[in-house]
Image 1 (spheres, rainbow, N blue to C red):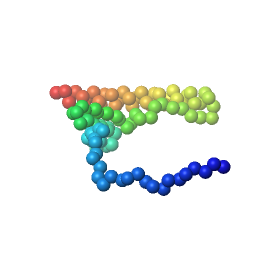
Image 2: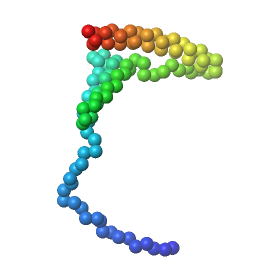
Image 3: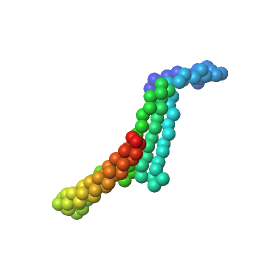
Image 4: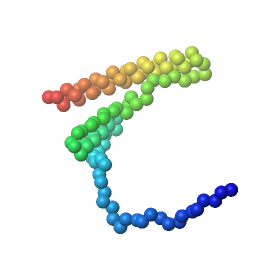
Length: 103
């Protein structure tokens, strides 16, 4: 078995670091009092703002489970109906909020 030389010396450590900023942004996370609406805002150093809005009531998409394939499909279809009702209600709520913002 060939042996390699092991060097225990470490490279010279600097006494200070001249940091260079690769990126800089501020971030704000906001939530409605009921916790359903969340708005995240990021502002980059150049002033570019990016916002992301989500409603936690509709995070999970429709699904179905059961003991048979048919039961899974039935539950999935029921779940779609429930999801559609939630989506309609949340969309209407969002439209009212947007209308008030644009006044």
